[in-house]
Length: 407
Ligand SMILES: Cc1cc2nc3c(=O)[nH]c(=O)nc-3n(C[C@H](O)[C@H](O)[C@H](O)COP(=O)(O)OP(=O)(O)OC[C@H]3O[C@@H](n4cnc5c(N)ncnc54)[C@H](O)[C@@H]3O)c2cc1C
Image (cartoon, rainbow, N blue to C red):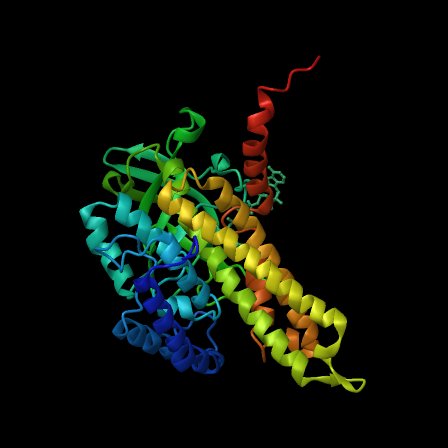
């Protein structure tokens, strides 16, 4: 048994999920695009997604991410990793299995810190796949990769807080089923730096909330949307503060750990699919009397892609293993490392797959262009590369700090 070999239970999920991908997900991709095109609405909820959700649920391929047995199969990170990778091969698979960001992270937060009322009103429907949610931390006016900069004010007024400020890049906020936001803001600017922030559960239709616009990503209007949202005198009952005032920063750390690694797992799936498409295309297309696959530079790209995928998969599994065995905090360096490496390597492979496809690679006849646009955003979302590298370097340098005696 290798170090990262998974359990029999997880292997069964893998086999079932692979079968579901072949029988339902891949054939549904063209239907999805056709339904979206026909609707003329970038935020339309296509019926095919709801059909896939019903089928995934019937097959028990539902809420696979959720670590608590009460709410899902209760898989470990190591068991879930190959499943997230498989779902990452198609942009519709995660939603079909109710394993899509940011709902997954929000469901974990509500499980850990939500009140009974939050669980009944929001967590239940989220787990059922009948509701969607968004996470609003980033702001247009401040550098949000340093979350201590967050400015949205949350001022206590009796039994309520009054929210004023602006958020953007709230992914999923344009989803037709989005009903709730988890909002991070500042409750006490005089407190210690990491105790100034709080998180609140806020219905998206609360008076004073205006969804201003969707932010296109490389020109794509993503169906779930990345919304800019204005908050003017939004009143939130004090009971909707998660965990307590001043706990926002701690919750965001708890939320982003698993979320980050899920993104990496899916990025590996996207890289695998790009490699598969690259190999197929290179064998089909003939130039100057020989298949493109016969050229040594193309073989070099294919070999490098295989080597790189194996490396990032191992690092992802190591991070998942550490999260399971010593906890997210102890695994933070590995989580940060894979959050940098996985999107970077996946992007390189997708870029080469696009090149091998020639002009077709940048069209929507193949999923590569969309995969590229999505993966490129992952070098920013959930923290830009530089911030993760900073954390790794700090950790690395720490061990030499005391030894650095200048003679
Ligand atoms: C598609 C997409 C979806 C997103 N979804 C969400 C969401 O659902 N909810 C949410 O709240 N946010 C979301 N975000 C926002 C994302 O988390 C932020 O864009 C990110 O944290 C960076 O913050 P910023 O844009 O304010 O960049 P800034 O903080 O202004 O930073 C700009 C750049 O400065 C550089 N930099 C920063 N710090 C350092 C450093 N220490 N050393 C060297 N260079 C540095 C980095 O290159 C960084 O990209 C999403 C973003 C994208 C693109």
